[in-house]
Length: 281
Image 1 (cartoon, one colour):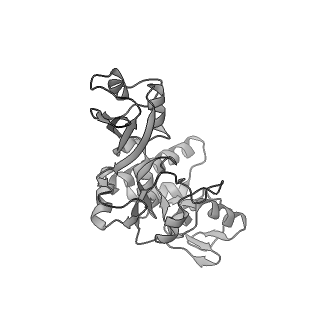
Image 2 (cartoon, helix red, strand yellow):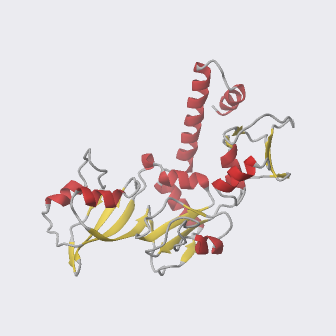
């Protein structure tokens, strides 16, 4: 089922353009949204595209990709998770150029963090993996600069909700290593710099951080600095980790129903959206 979506997202789902390039193309009047009867309105990138609409880029009709690609990279430490680092430091550009067209990272890892980083052309999958409500598990290996006993109260604090930081889902018993201690920590959200801020709040000095897995996927034997394309079963396993494709579709429908209700409450009903929702209810 084609679920109506924002014009900007439709273009992103149909081309290899980045968000910034889409905005530039829009500003240059290179993108046009035509309704099914050929009538041109006054759309914006936030306008909703329905299945009967036609979207053009540089005069060519766009169609959403039928085949989506997902890949995993064993990200080295010292690489910025952007397509172009503003300071000229190592970034993801070499890997993105080597991947299928339209690939962009799903989330990011800190520059100093190594490990599993996913890329995809599928915006719906990326959004589903990043949504906190789906509780997609991510495991990390942490290295601390001090020994840590199994009864250290900070271990319990790591998984105890607090107003001062976002806690983890699980944490393993620490293992002594040369630098101090090593442990495995599991998140079900993955907020910006969550682990680093957690350690800082608990006065634990983090000297190394490595992402081991996202959902059911692990790096396996993938060497540092290498990437590979996921097979169909692996992609479906990722979808399952978010609750499945049907769950994502239902969430999209719920959001459209809320939007339609808000428009009705404002006295400006979106009659086209109302008709579409009535056809799928």
